[in-house]
Length: 563
Image 1 (tube, rainbow, N blue to C red):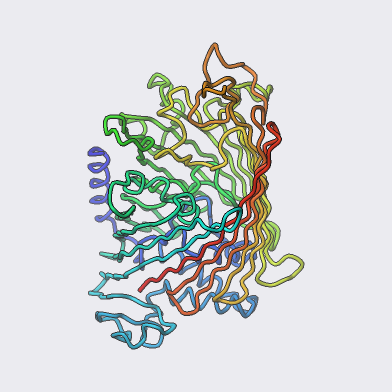
Image 2: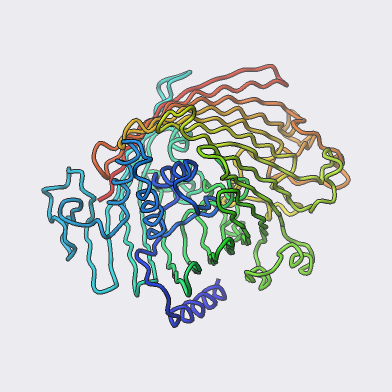
């Protein structure tokens, strides 16, 4: 990664010498922040004209600009939407900081209340906030408590998580955003229940290593992001660091980068001008966990995406990805080149994909979107959809806000189909995973999913979700002693074996398993920065091949605080 650091440093020095439009807070808003749900709803409602949710990591000033765009249509908002808008403006717009809206526990020089007296008030909370000229710093403490209990078939198993940490963010020189985050925690009880409550544990080294007296986990994030506008309507940014990344559309999960995978270390460049939105990403992850350090290795992920946005009509995009292992090729650092042909020139050792996506905006309150994903083979076998080399996937869905004029309600439907061997590669090191987790859609190859969700903002403090998933899978067949008997392309870690596996792979062949997943969840923020999340899930598994049926349910509660 030394070369990446050098390239980034050179770019940063060059950017700092270019004058442009003055920007407010450049640091990103985490992709998990609920403000994205509000922005999405307002986009579908037609109150925001230029938002691409196929790319993650909006700067805080961009979020504020979208919120101000919504405020210009204040008369079209419901009472709950107005309350949410005012809440998020206080959260993200520095101009909203004052003694009425904000507090700092340990002072600072912003005009806000100081000390503990407003800690349990509805003010925006900071541990410390300070500004000097065009530079600023915000420091916050954070912590989580969680409890998950199995309800069926046995109510005894449970799991508890507890952690604490802090984050530091701000903007320097008007254009350089920075972010630092560290979190340390532990868990006790049933590991399966803990991972259902906090899926990130499945790819956390300390948690998997489990050599301490308390099963612990830790997370670290941090980055520098430079953004400038050399002319009106043109935005250019460069970011280097680590955080959670999402790429591509998907109401349930994206086929490209779901955002559920482990955080990546990356260099990200983006360019926006007029209808053009271009994005280039180079990141690194690791292979599956192993206690034997000699078996660990590094994986590299490269991606380019070009999206064209036609206002009030649709956005259409094309993108590509490359996964390589144990070496850093200069060709994949080039942000303006077609990676698949570069891969050919490098002797075809890596895992390349290409995808096309579309999102509509010509119907008020109703959005359609779709993605077509090709793994390795580019269009040469589409005439025979049963060939093993035809590694394709697609996703279609719609987002309906205010159905039949019911305010604050959204309804989502999506269908995802992933053919056999998608995400696999002849070199298992190059499969579409990081830390042993699929970085694309988690249902994996030889599977499909029906996803439906209804969500309603009952108030600016309370949101309720009802969800349903039907997942069908075809799994590989093994003998009684564990030997692979028939490879149907249902395992991301099992490659196609030339001369052994059949050239034809039929969708959902193998051990046929159907899952139904029902969820009810509530998110409640009684006062600002104190949030409770409650969820109940009921899961059924029907093995059609073996004629067996099982079901289980669980419920968890999580409490998060940020100040």
